[in-house]
Image (cartoon, rainbow, N blue to C red; front, side, top):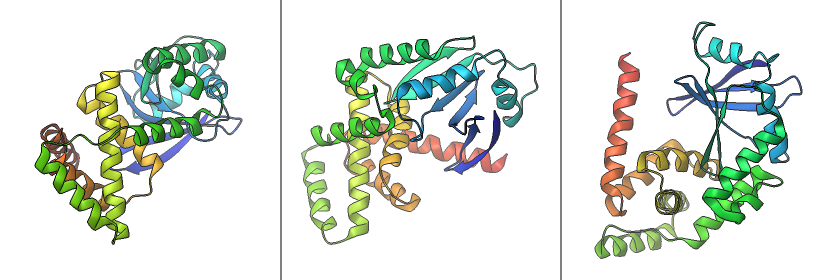
Length: 249
């Protein structure tokens, strides 16, 4: 495998690792000896993605060496394994040789556990596209939970206003989608708020075409109306603190 910088996006550094077959693996982060990865739309099915993961852990692969190099670690640093994120579900694959079939079975088993047979069916083929369909289905069948009745009325007025402003409509749509998906992750999958926000922003961003300023405005609106506005305020403060620390460093 060879590697190159994918780029900085909202203070989160990600890297693309490209195989000899020109398939791409995006590494979102490398912490505590674990590489967190997610699939791209390049894969036709789960097995193709599982084959790349299996290849990374093959004894002849240079994935570990490239991973340590690009993240600035020495060659003797610890590499414990790969953490895969699909449909918001995390699947850990230890750093030892494993077949593509076994990787695929592990992913299916974990997703089936969290999402039932519906989730398992969604990743059988075209899993990146169906991943998006899975999220879109959630957004259609759930509603935003509000802080109180007054907040709900205020939100309804914002929706009415957004009908006359395309930019504002994108902001409202993004805010609503983010809120609904986080609620789903918290309630149905028992994921804590901070982790749910991380997953939701990543997945909702992949479905939308919203600029950074619009996303910031959407989050600001949620801090006023959403049921989880207090938790969101604390999350936002933490993000700002991290960004400030990066700037000072």
